Length: 97
Image (cartoon, rainbow, N blue to C red):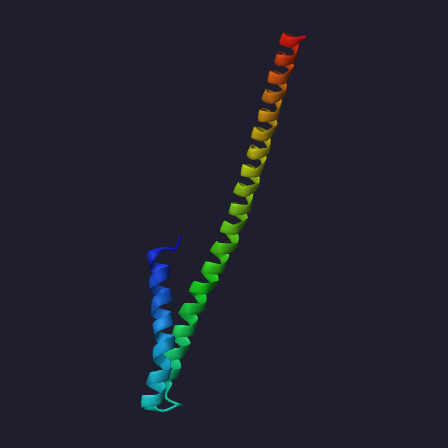
């Protein structure tokens, strides 16, 4: 579903977000390195999440369409079974009558 590059970017972004507080505590709260690591990590992670949300939205629409198609196929099959039973009953009635 996801391309390898997207998964890597999300992983790197999440890792940077996780590491940023450690860097901030070691180097000081107002350190530019900690701020840039946190910003880069958030940006990468957010982009990956946006892509994931878009893919999930598109795939859920596809799943709904497939489900609707399967539902219609099930209804058609049910109708055919009912018609076949009616034909058998009709043939049985004609044979007995």
